[in-house]
Structures are given as structure tokens and as C-alpha cells.
Amino acid sequence: MIELVKLEKSDIDEFTEMAIQSFEEDKIKYGDYPPLIDIEHRTLRFIHQGYTYKILKDGNLIGGTVIFDDQKGHYTLGAIFIHPSYQNQGNGQQIMRLIEEKYPDAKSWFLDTPYLSFRNHHFYEKMGYKKTGEEIPDKESDFKLFLYEKIM
Image (cartoon, rainbow, N blue to C red; front, side):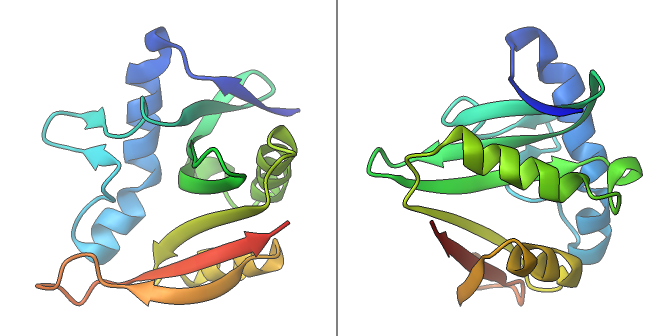
């Protein structure tokens, strides 16, 4: 059984290590971790600014998510990660449904994902998200994010 459980202070170290392991492929592909990860200090940014949940499967930590709420019914999936050993097993679909069910007042959901993350693009589109644009966070780089939205 998969569940979302509010992150507790005592979980932060394990949660951080799980995030670093989960985003290692992005580090290899793009040369850096996503903005969530402050690898120099081995900490995670933003987790205290949103709703942060551990993702558990049968009681074991398999990933996490940070969700931001604009208080007007629009939510942003600021980060979501699943440890590589739990990917491609259907867990992502269950997790996305749990997240959306947790916020029944949502009018829309927003997220971004790297431009070369084709598996992510396919997954989010399968879950009902539509690509709405692209963003270049650092004008000195070729790196792009694809922006997605899901209207509820």
C-alpha cells in the first residue's frame, strides 16, 4: 500500500538522501541536481515552504513530494521523486492520484520537468497534464524546463 505521510523533522536526513539518490540520473544527464537539492550542504531547499510528504510503500520510504498552494485553488507540484528501485512499477500513477485526492479543492495543478526527461513527459501527459510552455531558468545555459498544467 502506498501512502503520503507528512514529513517530520526526524525524517529529514533520510528524506534528503532519498532525494539525492532519486535525482542522480538528472545530475548525470544535465550536469547538476535540480534546484531542490543543495548538494554542497546535503540539504533540501523549499521543503518548509510547502506541504512536504514522504511517500511510503508498505511502510518503507520510496520517495517524496513538495506541494505549494497559492490559497486560490491552484497547486504546484514543486518536486516529486521516487527512488530508482521503485520506478517503472506503476507506483507513480498511484502517487499522483493520492496527491490529487488529498487536495479536492484544486482547480488546477502545475509542474515543470526537464526537457530531456521524455519518460516524465509521457507519464505526466498520461496523467492528464498538458504542456503549456517552456522556460529557460539560466540564460547562460541550454537547459530548459517544460511547463505542464492539469485543469481539474
